[in-house]
Image 1 (cartoon, rainbow, N blue to C red):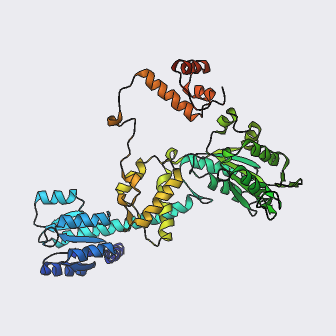
Image 2: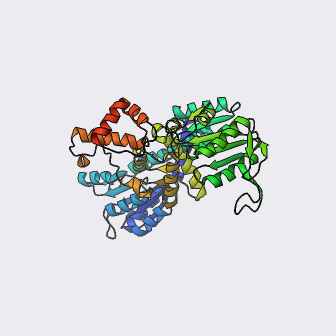
Image 3: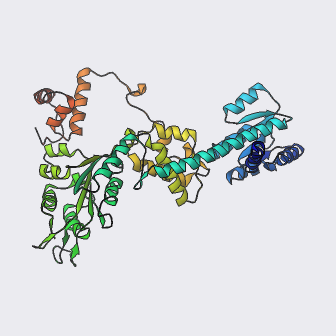
Length: 470
């Protein structure tokens, strides 16, 4: 019974493997295609390299078998054009054997080199190996799809220990929180975490309102959050409720709260403390019952020290704090995110994207992802649009990824000898700039006393950004 089942499996895998045979000799072409069909493979033959390339481009074959020497196009040229279109396409070379030709073909990307006249049993074994490889890849993709479903947490895809800790914290606090602060770099996924908190909370059926605090000037932001009455300002032709009133009983997500002004922070503090709002232009106070989730990519503790963020508001918001790590801190998530976005944009653009070529995988692995998950999604989305094969290759990636990245610490060509005092001066200035001129915080980051930093700045007569503290 086992032998019969094995034969049936071989027959199925051979039937699913289509081979395009390209040979300038019509007699050899007919012999090869007939032999392959008798063995159970799908075979199409042509003497035209252009026709064979078109078959590759349209997905009419899984394997190409070509003659090394053809009058219309050299075999190596055909190989290069094929792999440019589909880096994962196995190409079998046939020709009169020489060690140099075989090695050159393999180096340039050919799957195997078969000596003419072609040994049919060896050709069948090679194709059977390829058929089994394709079947294994199909099984792996099926298992990966199942795994991907298991890695979904309220719409967030991740498997790294850092994100598992985030998910655990979200599950623990979702039923009990009133205010939460989510921190992390831009594009790391703070809003999806906020939505997960809302979806797992007892008010999941109520409204989830989103406000990007950095996108509006103060007057418009106040109106957006608290609402306004008719005639409150020029253009206020109607009374309009704000997001706090709209989401009463639900959740309000305040993205980039670190961008708000001190007067607006005072009004937000009143909402948190008293659960009251006051529409712009109205003396009436209204009671609201909302859960507030705030997010920022800033260091709010440093902003408090600098006097740019209210300390009482910070402590009200940060009684529960969730830190979302950047993508560079969780590289284990990159493969599953790539798979998730490939599936998403493959469906959106009507393409059967199976994955990334090995070269493209290495490029994504070595990128530092300053834009985090949002940048990765944009990269896969744009690559999915331009890709013409089942596998995304380096040429499909955005231009800034195709160029080799240069690391300043290792780029010997960029290195130049500088006096130690000048290097120290440059480093201190960079730290001061990163701290927005806050000397107290800069001294702490540099590991020196505040007096030492003042003395250094006085000696070098250097001016940093406007100093707000210290």
